[in-house]
Image 1 (tube, helix red, strand yellow):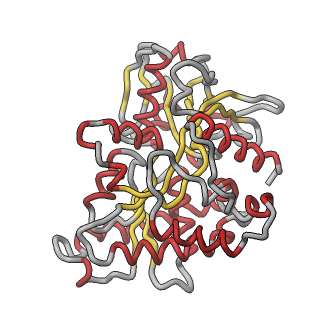
Image 2: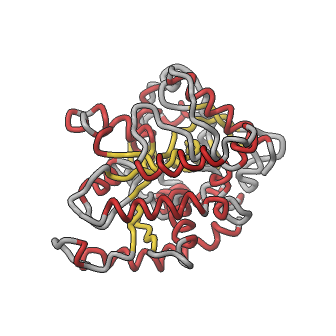
Image 3: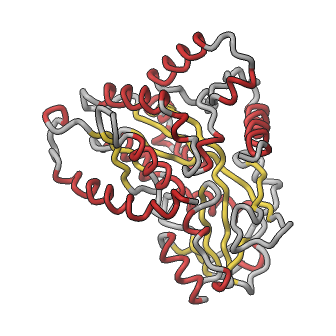
Length: 363
């Protein structure tokens, strides 16, 4: 799609800006420095989070009081740490399984009080890309499999996945691009990549590379944190034949911000970011953008976590103004009410139904 070919050059340009952060007011109060930018930490530059952050940056490029600057991250533990401690990072993408894992650690007991939800994104599909001679997950036992940098979203997901299926692999910690090259050379058996389909790194693979996606059957050990999903030719025409569906699972993705920071301008920057992002959200749903934007319900909550105050206030105001809209109109606008059932399984089921409804519309 158009945006995936635009991403590398855009990301390189904004990456150069991000690279200068270390010299911008290092160790000083940011309020005394240039404050017309807001840092959003994403994932590996080849992943879907990078594309989403780049598209937000593009949205804010014109007619906005400040710039959004994407910063490469891991959508996992590194992002959590920088959200909490880095004065240059105001918001960031985190996978929900990495977030859940960090919350249960001894030093993460108060994480739900220190981080707040800006928006809950739609499921991030788990891709296991393998050589032609690898036919199933079981074939990976004892073989070299790239799971991505330690603490990143792909590494967290891969660890849970292989544990659930009782498969022991030889894990590697390469970035996405390096892993794909190793796969093409045949020196590793597979690579686990987590990202919203179509993930640019996988979409660019040629049929001549003799790589394919392995099926992941949803079952015991995965129900707690994952949803069943699948891939077909519309997602990856170079890898999947007509009328073929490859089962997989998906984890969640959430855009978070720190509840407070040792930076007097943080709250105001985030409030301005939320107001502009939510008010112009329809622009991100237009053709040419990543399709995940058209599947997001801004009102969807994340069980056990608090919504950012600016986001909560904006949604409350919009719900008041749209009280006369019928339910479907609210869903179309990305403002479906978040009156979800109490049980987490029921919440996930309702959210899954919403995603399926959106995708069935053929957008």
